[in-house]
Amino acid sequence: MSMSETRRIPLDRRVLVVREERIDLRPERGAVIFPLAGLLISAAIFASVVLFAGDLSATVLVLILLPGLLLAPFAAMGLVYSVIGAAVVVEKAKKSVCFQQGVLGLGIGTMDLVPFWKIDHIVVEDFEQGIVAPGPHPLDFRAWEIVLVKVSGKRLPIAQVIAGASGDLIEEGWDRALDAAEAIAEMTGSRVEITADIETEETPESAAGPAKKAR
Image 1: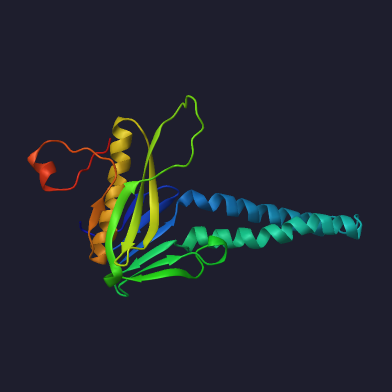
Image 2 (image 1 turned 135 degrees about the horizontal axis):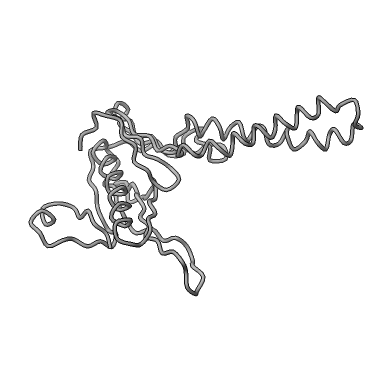
């Protein structure tokens, strides 16, 4: 897999940005909407306090100002993370995979640092989507999880891919999961292991390489 150009692989709520020397697991572009809205709401609150400071009592001003004071810092941190933050960083120069979480999961600080030589393989497996209530459901989904497995056996989840459980949607979602796993494995010098429930076509090509179609 050539990594001479920047590629973006959409995953569940995140996107894998693949460059020649670095891979970033970042929030999707739409993630900027909610923190930006929070900042706008905070700005509107502060503006209303300034405009009506002479007409309202101190108690009312405090009650109006307090939500803005609580909302603004979290919205600002969320905006910074959505623009420049990354949950997982793979760097060829440093030969390491950095899982970042930090304060409130905003990608500030390091949660786990894994040198390449401690990585055994990258696995693509079926992802359990939690307990589903009984009864008919209008939509069915297939989901896969990409997990880094260390030589010690410790497992570090990287990302998930969710796709509608029908025809081309499954195949397209599976391709994204496999592409992301292969990109990480190629940069880290490890291998991809597939434990997800998949099917292979009975052709010489499918026998020679990993399956690209899920069921």
